[in-house]
Image: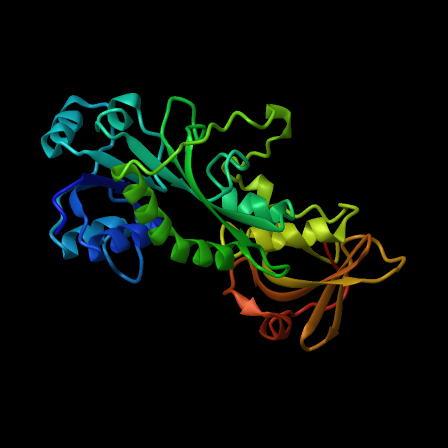
Length: 322
């Protein structure tokens, strides 16, 4: 195992785990891990509510801390004991200066966008929602202002026309390990020339804030079929685009939509009308054509491909979405 540098790794989710595994397999000196407290959000297939990073730490006997308060005296004292040379952050909450400023070689973060574009909590989702043709990964030194530190490395990747947020995330995960290691080596060997993010005017920046439930609601009246299509794939599979499905203007249920295809076609149907063409085709009218559902989930039922979803509908006429 490499003795230098001593690394504290900070992360929680599966995206974090990819980079952590690469570092561990390459025998870098991970002296400790900081991860989120146990939470039912992480519970999967009957396992305890541990973060994926905590599970990996337990499996490989790596010391770890799960602070609720990142500025508490006990946490900061324990952090000092590790005496890290550098900290690597992947998918974690905002760190106070007392934490990121502690190591003598600094702390760097891996962000899933081409900074300075798409600063914020949901860069993968917003890049697709906004119809971007490319995105990537950026490593940068953590400073006072969120996601605004000097850039160390960037790797670009194309976004395919039909790609969902989940599919793009998987590709970026596979890229995360190599860029983290290359960044680390560049810092250790002093082969880097960090670049300021101040070269783009603030009014030209696109942000990536946390996505709310209301952000996920589909606006069928949007004049652009491309925008509706991008929103659905940009929110798939999570947190998932949704709409309200109405039966005979009376009953309505929430309808989540995971996969669709767009059909450009001139028509005079009211926006949001649902047409069940056959046992495996359901189309929703929009201003530039139709959105054809491939996979969805009606409230109270399981996620289904469209054929099974249609078969489960008791009412097949006078349906619309709003």
